[in-house]
Length: 160
Length: 271
Ligand SMILES: Cc1cc2nc3c(=O)[nH]c(=O)nc-3n(C[C@H](O)[C@H](O)[C@H](O)COP(=O)(O)OP(=O)(O)OC[C@H]3O[C@@H](n4cnc5c(N)ncnc54)[C@H](O)[C@@H]3O)c2cc1C
Ligand code: FES
Ligand code: FES
Image 1 (tube, protein in one colour):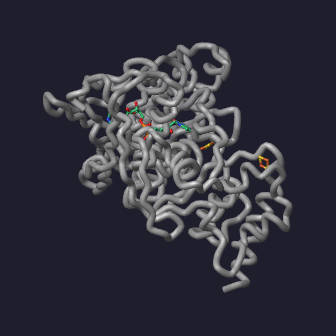
Image 2: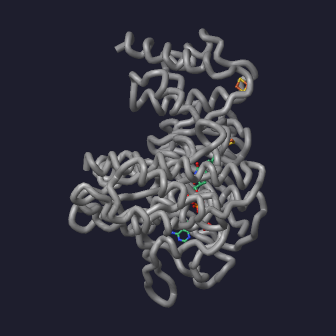
Image 3: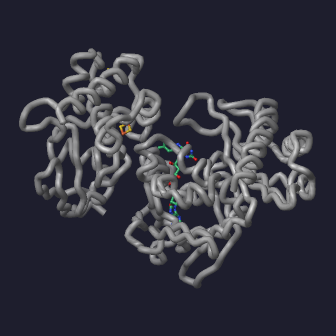
């Protein structure tokens, strides 16, 4: 059971190979094998969203994906959100709106929100709240997070 | 799978099984990812033949499919209620049925639509109606080595409407305290037939047969809907636990059945 499997995938646009045990989650692989520690472990059972990554264009909880399932897939983590020019509008807006306190939930929120903005750049507040229901924050009370996402939408629209 | 018998388990989206394995609910020697099997990922719909839904198709592929949303609104309701967006990227309707939780949000809908579970195993294929699939909390009729391959939904008859509703303490992301999945067929201004399946009020999802029989042939009026909801409460044999009491669950069953019937009837009129 403990023989390791070689997994080849694309992480943040870079071809990546890693070895993992069949039982390891994608989150464990990212953090412990690949030292991509931006994705956080909150609950390890799919409830908090702190481990959110984009897998082939869909947001998933990486704690509920096996590392071996990444074979041949495209993965975006929080480390891949910023662009060559600097912070992603979501990152900038989270800072400006003070949408974080302890920050544990923040990578998950930003990746999840990116998953939304990539598909629906004009999502309204209601849609944003619904989309982010799989992400928990124990500090901020969500309002600032939602405002930050709305601001990021405006920033993106202006850029275009 | 066959080789490891009950030490092997299937995984579709993994949103139940990975959590259960991590909590040491049981130990297995092999986990088989069924998403690689093409039949498990099939979605095919036609007006004439109905819908064949592969057992491992994730929820988002169900509710983002316009044809399915239109032809099977109750299925749309269930698929968009399970977990949050991250969970819906992975969780399957088939996994929801196989997991056989009394609270499974897809199961009443499968029963209301008279879906058939297509099963394949070492001894061959068999087909079982959804309402016979769950045998107890977390238990189903699959023999070791058997897999659920797909769910077959009959083509909706003209004038069919359906709805699934549940009650949860939070707005999203919670386990149903009670749920009701209903379908109705209207013909010549009357209810030709109705099906009502209830979640979280018994060890398995149950059909409210008395209420169903009552509605057959009745006019789709509020009065009859209310009477049917009262009868549905009789089918509920819930327990008291941390999520709700017996009294609350029976009351909720009535309320949810009534509301789901009303929505199903108005959808049937538009269909
Ligand atoms: C945060 C969170 C929120 C959730 N919210 C809800 C909710 O609101 N409503 C709800 O009903 N559920 C909810 N769930 C539970 C779960 O997401 C659903 O039951 C889901 O539909 C399971 O599908 P899956 O594909 O992930 O199943 P898996 O975990 O892959 O499998 C579930 C079970 O079915 C078996 N199985 C899977 N596929 C097959 C097959 N083809 N043949 C034979 N056996 C098979 C597996 O061995 C396992 O025992 C939630 C879970 C989490 C973690
Ligand atoms: S750590 Fe994955 S959802 Fe909480
Ligand atoms: S900032 Fe602390 S959990 Fe969100």
